[in-house]
Length: 143
Image 1 (cartoon, one colour):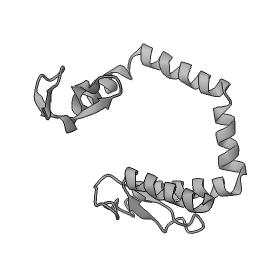
Image 2 (cartoon, helix red, strand yellow; image 1 turned 135 degrees about the horizontal axis):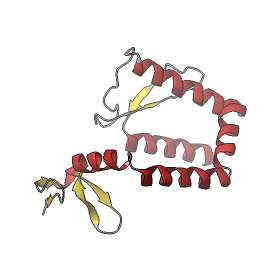
Image 3 (cartoon, rainbow, N blue to C red; image 1 turned 180 degrees about the vertical axis):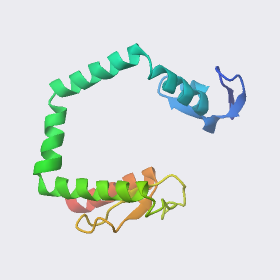
Image 4 (tube, rainbow, N blue to C red; image 1 turned 90 degrees about the vertical axis):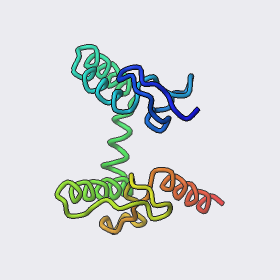
């Protein structure tokens, strides 16, 4: 069974059109319907309350304080932030285009910086290849 019925648009779609759910496998709405549902929900007062509670919970745990310390005061964290922001700005201005994954060819990719001292030198990798690359780097450093 490689198809599922969407509870919202009532169409039979392939499983790739549904987000996974940890308890029952796949969500009841397809990705398109889920996106429109979230867009409508985010405009409601309940969504605003939920976002505020999440923010307060993270603030109380010191998450933002630790994040800012890493990003602004740690030299390596600062280099990473500058590299990330420069790529976002160039993408927004249309100076660079997102490329397929260098390792597997998937379309949805992330920018990987081999060297943060050269923020414009990037390699386009999909999320899973990017994670694998960083895991291999950590293994080499620790091993």
